[in-house]
Image 1 (spheres, rainbow, N blue to C red):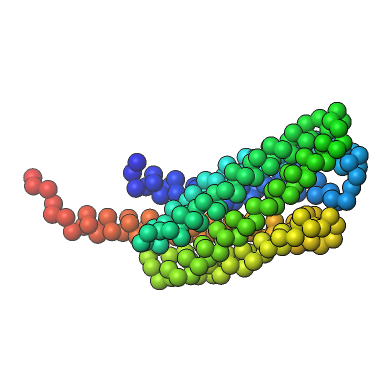
Image 2: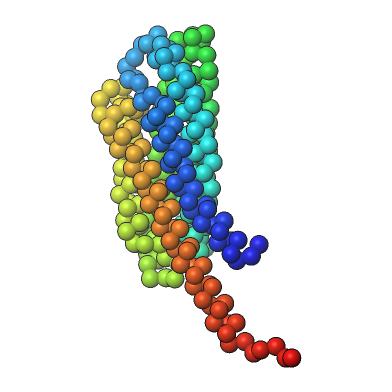
Length: 249
């Protein structure tokens, strides 16, 4: 692979952040109904899935595609952190594991959503509600690993400012803020209604809708850094070629 092709792939993986948000936002906001109240009875929950079956299934497919782009972006993000850290790179390894777990675990939750919406009218309402709870709460319970990965990435970005491959400092501080927002999902197992429940302001809206902007912002910053690195490499090659002796005639 030539250096040009290498940078082309890296920029594509950085841009996967935008593709992830497009597919996931379309699936969640245009097709997928918002989380139901966790105080609904089993029959009400089953009726909810019967009513919104098509939207759920389309949303599951779109969000599942989004997970593939999220994983690709995560690998590229952590690869750039790896180059920055140096030493044992223990911080980057933990960050990789913490962030890469999200699309993998969410893919399982999406599969459960798909099963719940596959034939809700033919399944026991109690089973439907139980699986719905597993999918909704399970998809939010990734927050500890996600918060840790965001926080470590933020600290690493801040501590490596001034280096040639540094990501911008504002991204480091933004990462720390978004990591704190993830704590809005901490009380989801203790409340069925209200702002601290799984469909409340803290758990669903604060945590979920700060995650996407963070990924887009990080992807944009990564794309700019990679573009600058490629330009610098081309300049070095041009200077080297200019200083090389002409071939003998």
